[in-house]
Length: 102
Image 1 (cartoon, rainbow, N blue to C red):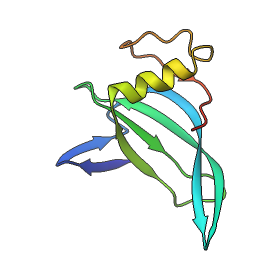
Image 2 (cartoon, rainbow, N blue to C red):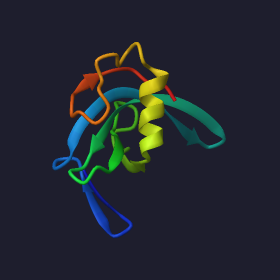
Image 3 (cartoon, rainbow, N blue to C red):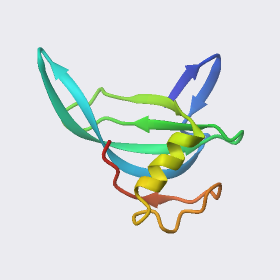
C-alpha cells in the first residue's frame, strides 16, 4: 500500500517490516461500536521513519490504513509487550510475530 502524508510517499513494498501483530479496530455501524481484529505491521523507512499499516479482514475486506508512528509510540508497543518481543533489539531490522491489542 502507498499513501502520501505531508507530501511524502510511504510505501509498504519499499520499507522494512519490523513487527507483525493483531490489532483491535473499532468499527461503528449506525450507533453500535464493534471491535474487529486486523493484521497490522510496523514498518521503518530507509530514512528511519516508522509507520503502521493495518489491513483488511474477513468482516471488513475494504479496510486499510497507513499512519505515521513516532519513535515513542514504537518504543511503547515494544515495552508494553517485552515478553513477546524479548529478541527485539532497538534499531535492528528484524521480523517478529507478536500480538498487541490496543
